[in-house]
Length: 40
Image (tube, rainbow, N blue to C red):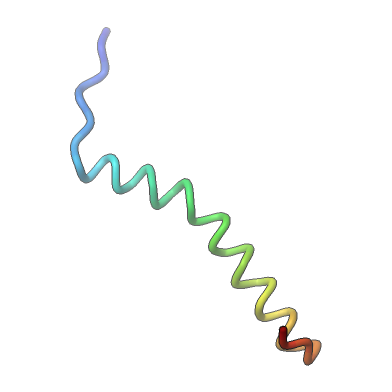
């Protein structure tokens, strides 16, 4: 069985799901730095 072709919406979903963990980790790091008073 062959999978159906990807559409633009599917591609957007894949990109979002690929970058979401990185984005969440970076936000957590920034929040942690601000809490510790370590800006730049």
